[in-house]
Length: 155
Image (cartoon, rainbow, N blue to C red; front, side):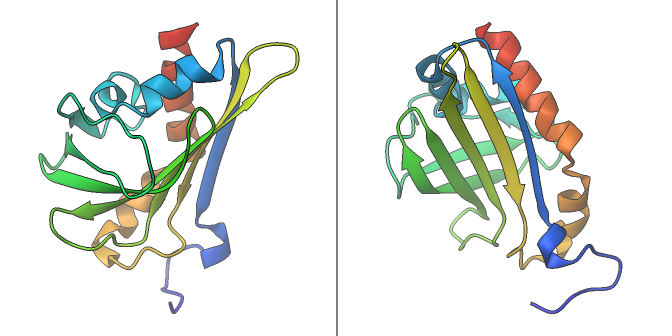
């Protein structure tokens, strides 16, 4: 994709935040892998609701979320999954292919207890120019807000 004026170079379109959470990876992952629970701790304040019963269990799963700001429904296509350790998805308009931005959660057990949780938003392959402004607004601070709320839910 060509560089567009006013946007950071592709190499800078990955945002990551991480923190240690004083809980086991299984407890944390349970909240991340259940879309119905995600609006409770979403630091972007972008998720309004998700139907119960969509627990993510494998690559290829698709779960839906209702967004707060747009009121639109998004399908999220799971592209990476390792129970208790890693989960990544690509959002899409209902019935359409993903537009190239990726949300990822990685969990690593700490030898001294607790879990290091890394949250990443990668928009290096985002093809929908109408979403660039929102992508730019997804900062490390917004990702950290999700981590902080997630920690508050389990600690």
